[in-house]
Amino acid sequence: MTTPFPDNPSQPDPSELGGKVRGYWEIMRFHKPIGTWLLAAPTAWALVIASAGWPEPRIFLVFSLGIVVMRAAGCVANDLADRKMDGFVARTQQRPLVTGLMSAREALTLLLLLLVAALILVSFTNALTIQLSLVGAVLAMVYPYMKRVTHLPQFVLGAAFSWAIPMAFAAVTNRLDPGLWWLFAGNLLWTVVYDTQYAMVDREDDLSIGIKSTAILFGHLDRRLIALMQIGALGCFVQVGLVFSLGWPYQLSIGCVALLFGWHQWLIRGREESACFKAFNQSKWIGLIILLGIVGHFWVARVSGT
Image (cartoon, rainbow, N blue to C red; front, side, top):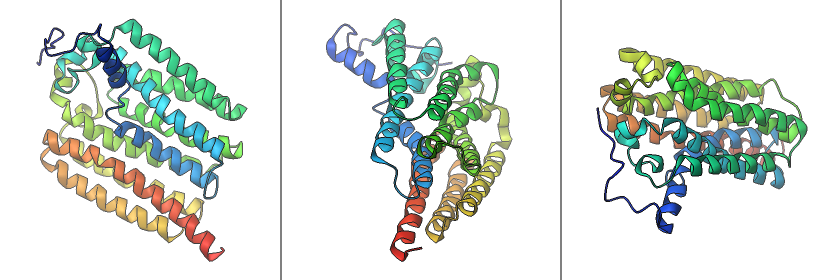
């Protein structure tokens, strides 16, 4: 088991302004934007599909800011929940609540401010979106504690990261198109895939401190079950194309995603931590590729007049 280093002399004095700023910056993960990209991807997919090409600027701005705020809030909630365990995991030993750059009270105050900001943002939409946002906030706040009670916290994270999809449709159309749930399911499965790869990096540390994850639950079947979920996600994405009549640019993007899934299977074949993290980190390109396929469909449709 790795031991924490709360008194590491290399850490800046938390009373210094620079240290405080760094603490706030890091606890919101602004120095690690991949989580923001992974949350932004399904949000953008849904906004573009629901808007048939390009969302209203006001809605686009609300959701863009909301992505940043809620991702930050989720990270703060996660660090508050894990503050007594992060010091025993190599990857999380330098988080602000472990090193002393921030106190738990400061983090809690920040979390409340972020949630208020999110509520203000969603108030610029409609009643249905506001109602859905409450469910999304609960999912984001509950997720960190699921690692203690179930080996399936990645599915809760998947639901939290996918909840922006019905919210986006509600904000644009003021209703929930049944087809959106295929997009929701595809993104949920994809989230479980990349977060399981991420959990494979911490598997030994998590086992030593009692944290649960799909990586631990799947054991030696991890690659096979990840493959099954990759196939399931692809099936859902194909169905999205059929339900919303998305043309060849979207179909091409899903083909590219299938190739990337295969590449990630090759990367994690030996379960090396660096390779598993590389597969996780490359997931941001999957979200972008699908978005380009969706935007490409509407661009081609507009140019061809169909």
